[in-house]
Image 1 (cartoon, rainbow, N blue to C red):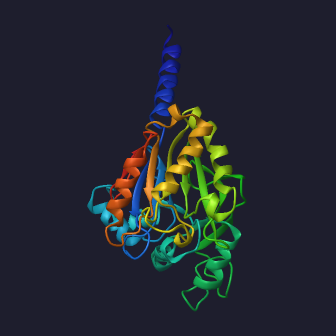
Image 2 (image 1 turned 90 degrees about the vertical axis):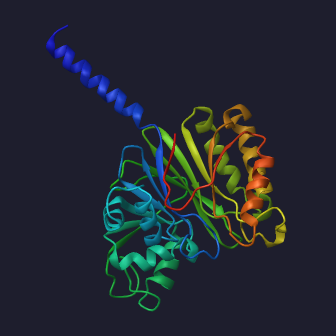
Image 3 (image 1 turned 135 degrees about the vertical axis):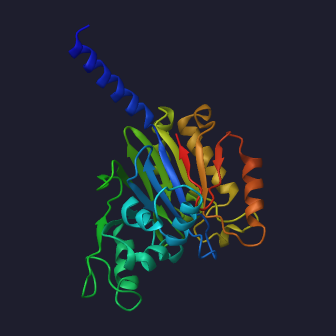
Length: 317
């Protein structure tokens, strides 16, 4: 073999090895709860493996979560650098305070970034938060003066969009969150691998939509092919919560009914050990322990249920 051929072969092998090494994503939870824990509310940093170009999925808690992540060794740089350099964009599923307050409060110290969301969500941000009454207008639209630190990127349902300053693309999908409330799911792709993040949502039967079913139709082929590495899905209440008081959320019973719908499309054998990150547990009373027990008892599919902890990173692959 010639020297040129040897060099070419080495380059090819390193390229293949590098591609294989990046089959998945890494996650750093900045906040994991729903409800009253204002220092630990929904926010998850997501990046492909071996990349430091993260997006933040919702933004209920930012600074406190970054501080905890740094102290836990999830990052080897300062909290300031994580905020200003590692987080490249925010994806806001819906504009409730427990999903957005961290971004609003920390915006003064932040660097220029994009905010990706559906039009109604962006209107709420411009009209009710970045309006010079609730907070200075850090956006590129709305009440003058617009300081233009953040640039709004309007997402259209079902359309694949390149996420600027990252190696990922995203497809936003509609969810119903206690009508007329709207929420979003985000399907991220990198190097042929996918991860699916749900904002707050109720089941189709209660919300009277087919939004969840549409998402499962899109997700099932990715599960069958082994390309969907994980799902983030909320469980806000224990099964004791009456259906009429779910307010656009899931219980373990509804969570598993949705997983069973997905299994009908993807195949039960393909669901075993599927990574499912359980988000948005409301910490009232002993509901967290109940939720975990109820999910475990109803997990007939053998899902790999992941209960994230603030500031402790993990991988999905």
